Image (cartoon, rainbow, N blue to C red; front, side, top):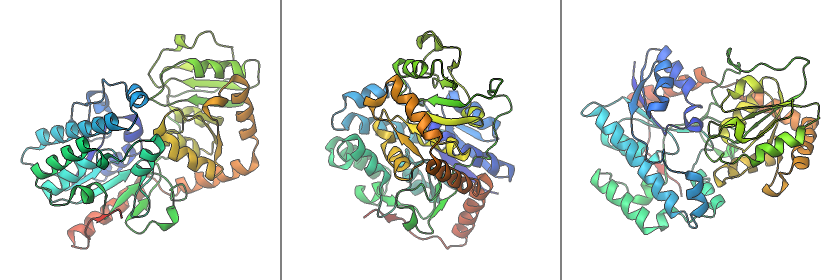
Amino acid sequence: MSHILFVNVAEHGHVRPSLPLVTELVRRGHRVSHTSTPGFAGRFTAAGAEPVPYTSAVAAVDTAEVFARDEDGAAAHLLYLEENLALLRGVTDAYGTERPDAVVYGDFPVITGGILTERWGVPAVRSSAAFASDERYSFSRDLVDSAGFDDPLTMPRFRDRLAELLAAEGVRASTEDFWNRVEDFNLVFVPQSFQVHGEGFDERFSFVGPCTDGRAPADGWHPPEGGPPVVLVSLGTTFNRGPEFFRACARSFEGSPWHVVITLGGLMEPQEVGPLPPNVEVHPWLPHAAVLEHARVCVTHGGTGTLMEAFSRGCPVVCVPHSPDVLPMVRRVDELALGTVLSPEETGAEDIRARVERTARDGRVLERVRALRDEIHAGGPAHAADELEAFLSGFRGGRAGKRRTVG
């Protein structure tokens, strides 16, 4: 059995897709470690993994404010680099002279993951909670373009700091090649049909989906009596800062047959939303899976985690993007007719309810979502573990190739 280190930032959208895979690998007898801040350590120990502590550089930062004031992306890119350095320090302190047998790193800590696998000479696996990148399509470039930011390698402060770090670590690749590399094996936690240009990705990419078994948690939310149509409203856990949108949702469905469940992502308290109609309930935090089991529509910011949870249960979405990091996913929802998109100017009370009701009865949308649900259920944690074990076996047998770079 192998010792597999997972390197990722301790945020819900990054941890949730791979946690079932961690659980499955432990069940099969592997030793699994996962980088973690104190708030997430319990999730990994419950899965049987060993938390590797690190002190986040962004935990105390209002990232929404950073994005709002950042005209060219310099502040965001440097903050990204600092978080990678924080992860690198945490892993270095925890491991000392020890090393794992393989490193699975997420899309965010690509610097940390690349340095560690070069340092230890162990197999590198990149995991993508959202879209994967190859020589034709770069998700990171798509994000930068969506935000209207400059490419980080065009910024001297970022480029020079990264180059200094790579030189200090003895990384032989150029800064450009290191930054744009494509690993020999990539686990992608979305279905291939949802991936941008998914039909062109080769055998280096295993589209295992969001690794969900489709079951609702036993101790979660329960629907009201009488079976009213349910709509879930959530804007995620990162940029969800103000109550105005949730107030508009409550007004929108007042006096309607709909039962509305609003979750606040742990970023505000229900009383901040204000007085509620009897058919609206607000929670600081709630397992989405429990509600989505009964929901007709999910109103979401468009984060990949919420999208995949909704689609895995055959639930269409109304996307209300309010930060640039979700725009590539929201565009894909629109392209594939998996729901509808509201612009920031269309978030009045009348707009929200009208769009939800239109989505709930759109036969084409419902058919597309059901097809994607079936594709998601064809993957899962067991399939992901099979794929990872096969790659590691091939690596030990000398069948792995060399890293490639995005052209």
